[in-house]
Image 1: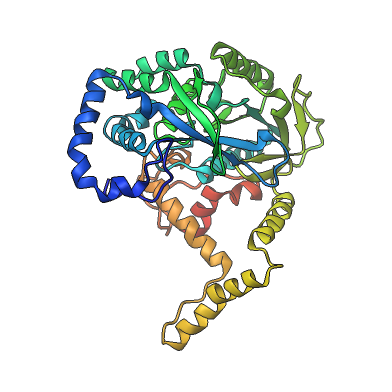
Image 2: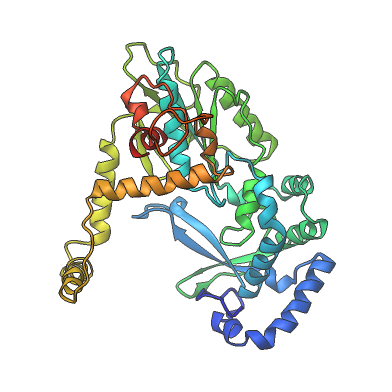
Length: 417
C-alpha cells in the first residue's frame, strides 16, 4: 500500500492517500480480511460495487459505440486483486495462455504482434507459388461485456489454478453492481450478470482465458494473431472459408457475437496478374485494414495511407495553431538543448535512421536471448560452427524478394549483425 500510486477512488469515495498514508495501521487488518476472504472463497458485497467511466476509443465522438466502459472498483478491491494476481495467477498465466495471444503478456505487445503479421505474410509471398495472402479481421460485439460466466467458469476449472482462487474469482464476478459516473453525476446501481469488467486487475487474464481455445483448422498453413478482443486470421490457400466457419462456430458455442459489419478481409498481393480469390460470403473485402493502430494496404510495400493517417493526427495532438503549445515545444525540445550545451553538456547527434537501427538491435537482442519471447520461434536455425564474420550464428535464410529481406527479423540478420 505504501507504493500505491495516485488513482481514482471507487464507489465508496475513499481516496488513494488514505490507504497510502495509513498503510502501517491498516495492513494487519486488511491482511486478516484478505486471508479470510480467500479461505471462505467469497468477496465482500460492497467491494463488488463499481463506477463505470465511459472512455472514448477514438476522437471525435459521433455515437455511444465509440465509448469503452471502464469499471472503477474500490481501491481496496484493486489492492486485493493485485495481490491475488501476483501470488497465484501471474506465473501460471504464462503457461495457460497460448502464444497466439499478444496482449497482457510479458514480452508481447502490439509491436511484436505486427512484426509477426508482416513477417509471415511476406514469407508466404516470397514463395513463387503463392500469389496472395488473405487477411481476415474479426470483430466481436462488446466482447468483454458479454462473456458468459458459466462458460468462463468451466474454462477456469480446467486450469491448474488453486481451487480457492478460482472460487474467489467466480464469486467476484457474481452479483456485481455498477453505476455510470460522468462529471460527478451518477446513476443508480444495476445488477450485472455477465461480462468481464474492464479496468480491473484480473479482467485481462479472464478474457484471455475465454478466447484462449480459439484454434485454427489448419495451424500449420495459416496464422492466428490474437490481441485482447482483436482477432486476425491469415491464410494463403483455399482454407479461408473453412477458417471463417470455424471462428463462427466457436463464437456460437461460447455465446459470443461476431459483428459481421465490422469483420473485413484484405488480400495482400505481390507482383501477380492472377485474379483475386472469390470474396467470402458476408465479409467485405477492402484494399486496406487498420490492425492494432497500423494501416496496412493490399500492396505490402506501400505505407502511404499510414503516413497520411499519422501526420494529421500528430499535428492535431501537438496543436501547432496554439502559440502557447508552440512555446512549450520550443522550450522542451530546442531551448533546453541550447541551455545544456551552454553549460558544458554535449549530446551525440543521431539521425532518425540511426535511432531506428538502435531500437531494432535492442528488440532483436531480446528476441534472441529469450526462448519464450513471442518472436523467438521465427528465428532460423543456428550453425554448429561459424563460417561468416557475423555477430550471430544463425543460418541466413534463402530469400527471393527484397520486400521480405527488409522485414524486421531479416533486416537484423543481414544488415545489423
